[in-house]
Length: 244
Image (cartoon, rainbow, N blue to C red):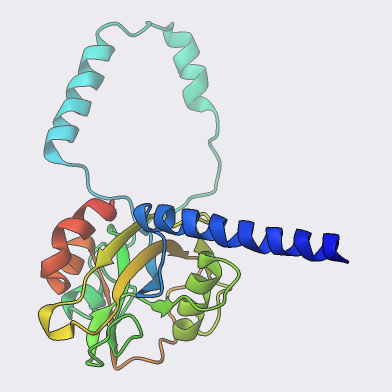
């Protein structure tokens, strides 16, 4: 009996010593402590629908490359070219009409529509109160949720997006790890508020052009340049994080 109690006491002492050694290491490496909150935020994007216009400089280079290669191309016999041109002829005829690049949503500057800026990536922003902001005032933000007891951070991010759009069947989360994170310290007026670490996960729109956005006062689908206008204080961070 004395031997068992001694072993238990030794084990308890070792656990306390191990915790006291690990705790400073966790703080140095940036892991969460009791005085800060962790937030999973979702960068929900719609990929380009049409091929972006070629930059004039790129177009000029491609034209030059084509003409340069034509000088050294192999010369085929005219008989062979005549045979290749005669293939595929028939009674059928296909009328190809390209889709317009400028839509009604572009003309009306309708930022609630996904049918705008078809050659750019669009990102969902919400306006309203959020758990990631301690002021309690409505602000523009990405879909987000404070990490509580979820199995993983990605599960928390999925829950944040699901609370907004209701169903994840038309979404695709890119990877299990966050794409970026930012640490936000409380201001002088929020000295009693805990610090915050916001981890960003990327998710993409799949096979739909409309969502039933809820649990917010307003929302917009905006390009990268427009995102920077909504977050001027963090513009440099988002400029590096968002690639488009």
